[in-house]
Length: 114
Length: 114
Image (cartoon, rainbow over all chains, first blue to last red; front, side, top):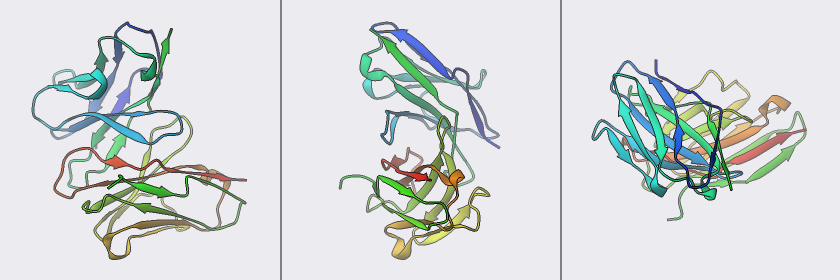
């Protein structure tokens, strides 16, 4: 069975400094992995996805993530945080049985300090 | 096409009442998913449809919950005899059946049972 673990429930960074949100996954098969962002009272927006192509995945708003099979990790990074990045971030693994059902992590709340 | 639409955005109901939510997916998307998100948690899978066929239901979906997708277009999620524990954000998402890419989520329906 697939699962994801988001290692930090809260992360605080200063504006202009790098962002690192950590995610480890467990999957019996080659996984499809995603990062979604959720702003308060808003729906989930896809930031980026890994589906067995390039291991370094670039997403929207300057975010990127690197798939590391040996470490079973898919950490999300951004070189320079912006105030508008403050939100909840979810790491997701997709069921590979054909249902494309998502298994979500518990989320990381990113706070950006001025 | 304006994406996935959910109605209503907010619903407050008294315990024991029935409620129904509607989801209109992106028109060419064959697969439609329902998720439930409680405060401070990641979304959890409830059920999904391939066209009009309901192919999987989570054990979270008690017999008070029913979902339909007549004619493979919009979907409804009904909760009968609501309980306070049903208070949550109900999210709908859709995806083309052939895609491994990310879902498009609606903005959700926030249910509060008082």
